[in-house]
Each structure stands twice: as C-alpha cells, then as structure tokens.
Length: 437
Ligand code: PFF
Image 1 (spheres, protein in one colour):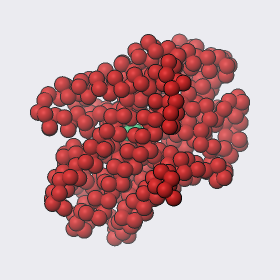
Image 2: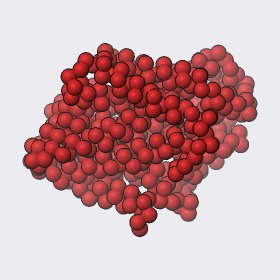
Image 3: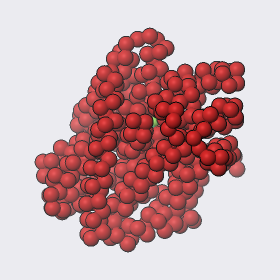
C-alpha cells in the first residue's frame, strides 16, 4: 500500500507535463543530467529521511516533527519544517489544479475527435482558446478541486491506491504506443539528442536551481506528504529498497515522456521552449494521426487527470489532517476550508495566462513565480531540514532502528548522502542562486 500511495503521489503532472516543458525551456540535455544527479544524490537520501521521520512520528508532518524534535533534541521548534512544507503544498496545489483541469478538458476534446488529422497550427489555436478563456478554466479548476476535496472529506484513500495499481500499467501501454509513433513519425534522432546531448555552456545558476527544485517536485519531497505516508509503512518493510523503486519508476516515466514529446516537437517545427503548453501542443498531433487515436488519446488524458488527482490528494491531505488535529474540526470542514483557500489562490494562475499575462516580475507571470517560490525555494529548504534532522539530530540508535533492514553499506550510503552531500548541494545551489557566490 505504501509504495502505491507514494507512487501515486510522485507520478503525476510533474512527470508528463512539467518535466518536458522545463527541459524544453532550459535547453535539454545538460538540464536533464543535472536533474538526474539531483534525483539520486539529493532526492534519494531525502526520501529515505522523510519516510524514517514519518514511520517514527506516525502523525501529520508538523506534529511528527514537533514530537520527534522534542524526543530527539528537546526542542519542538522543528515543527516549522512541517509548516514550510505545508505552505509549499498549498501553493503547488493552487496551480496543479488548474493544469489538471486542462488535462481533463483535453480528455473531452480528444473524445469528441477534435484532433483527427489536425495541424500544428490548429492544435496551438485550441490551446490558446483554452488559456484565453477564464470561464472554461474556472469550471475545470473548480471541478478538479471539488473532486479532490470530496475524496479527502470521505477519506477514501484505500480505493485510490488500488486504482494506482491499474493506472500505471495502462499509462505505460499508451506511452509505448506513443513512443512507437514518435520513433516512426517524429524526428526521433533530434529528440533524443536534445534530451541527452548536454551543452553545459547554456547552464546558469537558475537552471541548476530549477533542476534541483524539480527533483523535489517530482518525488513529492519537502512537502511532508512522504512523511505522512511514512506512517503507514510497516516495520518489516525496507525503506531503502522502497525508495529506490519509487525513484526509478518516477524517473523512468519522466524520461519516457520526454522521449515521446521532443521527436514530435522537432518533426513539426515546434518550439521546445514553448512553456507550460508544450504537451498540449504536441500530443494531440500524435493522437490525430495514429489508428485508434480517439480512444488512446482520451484514455491517455483521462489517466493523466487521474494521476494528477492522486498527487493532488497527497498535496492536500497533510494540511487537512493537521487542521483536524489542531482545531478539532470535522474532516469535511477542514477539507472544504483548505480547498476554498487553494481554489481562490488558483485564480491567480488562471489569470496569468490571459488578463494578467503581461503582469510580469521576477521569474515571469504570477504562475511562474508561485511555481518557482514553492518548487525551487520552499521544497528544497524544508527537504534540507528534514534530512538534516534525520541524519544529524536523530540519534544514531533511532535512525539505525528505522533502517534496520538495510545492509551496513546501504545505511552508510544514506548517512553520507543525507549528512553531507544533500545538505551541501542544496545550500550551495540556493546560495549560488541568490548570487552570494
Ligand atoms: N510529485 C507530483 C508530480 O510529479 O506531479 C507533484 C507533487 C505531489 C509535488 C505532492 C509535491 C507533493 F507533495
């Protein structure tokens, strides 16, 4: 169950929508390599640390950190780490829901056969029509938030985890069909070389920060949701092995998505740096040309919407559980309250693509800034603190007990990465970005 819950949280829009689009914006290969390095040197130790904290704390991320902080260091101030994570989750869900709404809209459009034999120009127009329409986006964003809130209110996570079990193979099958299309109809060699041939000359401090931030985002780290799920991991299950499996699956799906999308981009003379609309301007072209495109296309967008839903639930659950424990209110009241706040925040993302698209500062539109702040600053900071706590402040005895099923070598790898490599990398990348170096 644990592995399904965390995979359901990790695999989502981050893999299929965000990874290809930020890879495109950041110039391809070199970005991908930095991202992969971050996944294994920073993501792995932090995931292990978060699961350990969750399994030991057995509560929502804030309370777990408070209790463990008192137990291990005599200081409950560690709960701040949980707060930073919740703040990030709040911001992320506000735009996540809007983008999930787009995928649901594309599910309906594909089902209507709109993309049959379509051209790149037409697909672009359809995307622009969506982003220019506030009412349309509002309907889908509201629909997605209502769905998330009602599932959380009922606490029906169990059924969803089982659904993840069927969703993943189905998603993989459709992705294989799409890959076949990209190999045969796309410009596969150019796509592969864009994705894997590094050009380090175009890398800046900001690119590295985005790659690291995405490692956190895609693995759902720093937010506390892995801490929360860690509470469900049974004592006899291996934290180390489970983490590796989740990370490999997540990375595989993201690279797979890149391999599908970029050959289509280059075959149709599209711009790889097109931004958040990238998958919506490429995949419909493929579905318009393959046999059974309506069925596969609709199924694909339905599956992505579902993957987004399981991630959204994991984004909302920790704050709802925290609110219930803190204020002693009903689960449904807590879910509606948080949902309303996040829904309102989501309006800014919707407006970033139309009325407020020229309101640009710091990292771009309001959406760009919300994403940047949450994914690239807040997630790494709280992830850093989770791992520093687990590796420096939790006693050797406690961490050894949580990782009792690992070999000494595995334990030492975790401890070395968690104590030195991950914290140093996060600190250097953050400081470098601020421009102190
Ligand atoms: N990992 C999810 C994705 O890749 O789509 C997004 C996400 C879920 C981020 C949960 C953070 C989180 F806590």
